[in-house]
Length: 391
Image: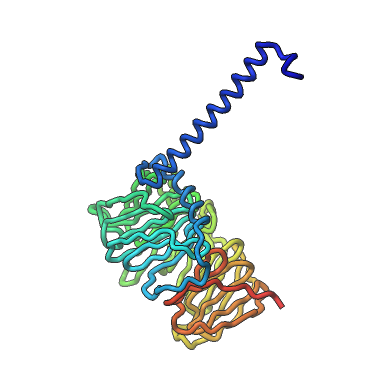
């Protein structure tokens, strides 16, 4: 219909509608620009913290560096891990974030005596073990600072940005405080039996697992308490006897428990053990979880002693087991490859157990990092591990 045939009333209504759209668009642009300015000037509150995470994540991607390898002094690196679009590296003096192209996009100089970090999809929690200081950061800013009443034993952040902080307690053996994304306290779980040494949250933040130890008749025993984060109520505890070296949710309903002599898959919903994989008298060296697979390395204590490497599905179906001729220090699963860092060499396997490549790394190699594939961290560089084509 042409504008000539439109009535004055219809034409006025159409113009009002177009003007309303323009006003709404201008208002939205003003809000976005204001939020961006507040974020980068640091003048923002908890309500903009989530928005700031998205800005920070995007800015990390678009800040261009010289690429990998990154040549620098990494000899004092304490931890390194993926933090969403960035690579987080913690040293005794600083917390650094690097972009996918090797640019140092954020450097936070801390004064912590015993710094420890844990990372999630867009944030990291940085704390001073044995002290009371806790900080929450993203790729460009310190978002929150929290002073706990008691000294911190352990802290962990989930992908839903909930944080579980395990501390000592004035009245109990210890306690775990769970915070929301804006560092508002959800609840406190008090440990009356045993001593809490750490806690972990499911990625959704709905379930909390607290690892505790105690001595019974001179023997160290363990209990893992499962707590529903939605109401803060304890559901049940898992008594295993031996001390777990690692506990990790691999889904909301599955908990991986790694002991010195075995790994166990636990059904969180029904409180039952689903599967177990025994090491046959050997000792756990490393475990990695990614996608649909779990990789576990086990063997003796000597650097020159051969080790066993097993790839499992998340249902604990054994895919393969191979022998590696040295002690295994670290594992990484990425791009249909299982990378294995030994005492002197880096081994690359495909998921059919075929050894595709072996590279001598020497004594300077420190760890493997799952970030945009697999990275090799040494005392002098961070480099990409190039995928070898299957033969």
